[in-house]
Length: 239
Image (cartoon, rainbow, N blue to C red; front, side, top):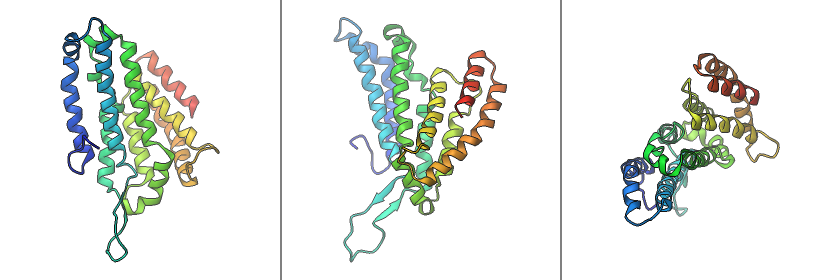
């Protein structure tokens, strides 16, 4: 990881994210120096989103992560050791705070007038989807069930924390509605016969899907606009 500072990818990625936030308002000025149209602006904007996506990849390795230490047989200590619960929770919070809760700084109003809101939404939504798929990969979830005793961070705790982060607002915006629906779809996908998730993972996810129904029903009642009421009603049919 060339962007990492020391051994803490989460801290390094938070610093990198702050740099990107400072860059975005200047993108149009950067593009204006070299371009006659807005293709250069779109390319620069895409590079920012791609860089944030790389940070997500670095951070995601901590969730369900396992350290491997190269040791000879005469050296003491474990060869494989789970990432601590504290670091796994911090990694999950990075995604919730900076990726799944809409990163408004990426929906820069002035850039949207040049590239269109649809373009910005599409690029940010794709990044959010990649992040969700990283966290909910079957191999990662399987590993969490294998190492939860050593790490002190169970799959149940991770899924609950992720779910609470995704459904913590009464009136989500367009991108937040999309990632909520993707979360439910992904959980269903992981519980199918074709899924490579182990049986423990499937059981935990099925139980969570059942628990989600009451949460979403409450959100529907609290919602103050028709789009979100329809959204939460639709989510209930997906359960």
